[in-house]
Each structure stands twice: as C-alpha cells, then as structure tokens.
Length: 409
Image 1 (tube, rainbow, N blue to C red):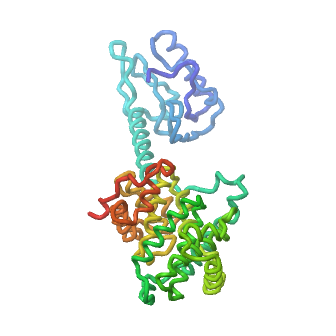
Image 2 (cartoon, one colour):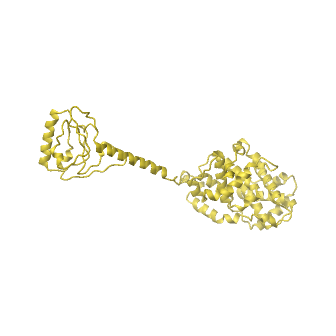
C-alpha cells in the first residue's frame, strides 16, 4: 500500500490529547510540503477521540479500509526519513516495517498488512473447506405444490405416515403358494404378465394395475383356487380395481371378451361377490404406486428416471419372490436401481434417504434382485413388461443397461 489517499480515512481510532494531536497535525502538514510521500490526511473522527477504540474485521467483503487495529497496531504511510510522528509514538507501536528513503522503492507493503492478507486468505480457504463438508440439504419437496389443491400439502405428511403404518395390511405371506394345491408360482407369473398387457390395452391408470395385483395376491392367500379359475380371478380383480380407481370403468362384457369368452358374465359377478367378501371390502391399501410417486418427487426425477423406475417395479410384480418386501421398500429400491442403471454408479442422496426412510444399505438386497430380474426381462415367454416399455411412449426404458456392477460388489 503506497499510502492513504486523500479520500480515504483509516478505520482505526487513535486516542490522545487534543493539543498533542493538533501539534502532530501541524508538523505533518509542514512535512507534506517538503517531501514526496507523507500521511496526507487524518480521519476527522480522531480529533474527538478520547481513547482507543478497536475495530473489527469483516470475514467477507474485506478491504484495506477495514483492517483491525489496537494500541499495538496502526497504518503507516511511507515517508522519506525514519523520524516518527510524535502523535503516533505514544499510542501506536509500528511493527515489521522497513523504512525507506528517496533512493528506495516506495511501493513496499508493511509486513503486518501482508500478514493480515495471509490470515484472511486462510479464513477464506477454511470457509471453502467448511462448505465442502456440509451435507446435501433436505429439500422441501412440497413447496412447489402449495397452490395445487390436489397435492393436499397440508396433509401429505400425515397421509404418508398413515401409509407407512398400514402398508403391512397390504402385504401377503411370501410363501402363501404352499397352501395352493392346484396352482403354483409360474402360473401366477403368467397371469400377472397377461394382466399387465390387458391393463395397457385398456389404457387404464397406473394405480389400477398395482391394486389389481394386490387384490389377486391377497385373495389367493386366503382362498384356494383351481387353475381353470385363475384367469377369472385376474379379470375380476381388475374389474374391482377399476371400480375403485378409474373414472370410466370398463364393463363386465369387456373383461369377458378379453378373456376370449372363457367365462360368462354371471361367473364374473359371482367371483366378484366372493372376492369382496373374502377381502371384507378392504380395497384401500397402500400399494407400491403411492410410494413411487412420493419417492420420485424426492429424487427430483425426470421422465427418463420415472419410466425406468416403473419398468423395474412392474417387472417385480411378475416375480413371486419379490412379495417378501413391503411396498415402500420396493418403490425405494426401484428408484435406486434405476438411478444406478442410468448413471452406472451408486447414487442415493440424503434427500431421498430422508423422504423414503431407507438408507442405501437397506435397499441393497432388494436392489440386487431387481438387477437380476432386469437382466432377463427380454428373455423367455413372459415379456409383456419388456414389450410395453420398449415403446417410444415409455422412452424405450426397457433398452436401458442393467446396473450389473451392483451384483459384483
């Protein structure tokens, strides 16, 4: 720093008697007329000061006007000789300054200024390190829906708390097929794969499909069925789900026709009575779909991630083995697996962990099974889901590369 300009005032207040300050000011005025460099101005605040007032350093927005000082520290302007002003001798002790004369470079910066700059640089580096250590913030994923009455932002937390509490009621035993004498897991897989195709052909809502499969499993867990009636159970379950979820419901004759007239209208209605009584009319259960919507929102998903996540979880509907996982875990694992598939590295943000209540470690087993299912999606005879998601409507999600690296770790 070459000196204090005429328009700048030092930020430190130096105390002293008024007579001494006036005498020093007169002496400095004489020196300014005879020398190249001198202290050119004194802050007018000095004239009324009665004691030293320390200044503070702002962490940000630092300028040389705001350097801290106390009784042992003050600004020093370059001057042509080594004589120190009397006004500074009593109140400030100048440290680390190389005196200069007319033959020396007048641009020498006082040592304490350099030390102050180094200190501030170190503080800035510490700020950067602290910012890097800060974890991802938990986002308010409902703030953008405050004006949407259908989003029910005021109640959404209570709704999902209820879903988590009651999701166990929608689960079935992963070994319920042991109680069936005439059907097995493969027959169930064939039925579910066919129902997915029927659902797609009828252009029904997503939640209808998930409720349909849930009704089928809960009914088969409690009622023994012969294989000839298994398809009847499937179409009747979809009819019930449509009545619960859809605005425009397909009529009974549509389901009779789609089953190639294997059953009559009366048989469908009789099965409907049996199923609703067996399930005690309990159709309001949380399926993986309701959790998928919430968790995709937490993951800040785009269309590509959404389509791949639904492709993976619909593959899981066909797999009897996946019944051992609760709906919320299936939804979270499907999104995690889809992210790993898209980006080819493990990705599970703090935001997703917070809103799903599942850590990455808790998703590990389910996600690995999903990768195995994804690998064989296009093979064999049950390719309904694969063909559905191979279309442009679903962004060719079935063509995505499976996250095989999860199986290797």
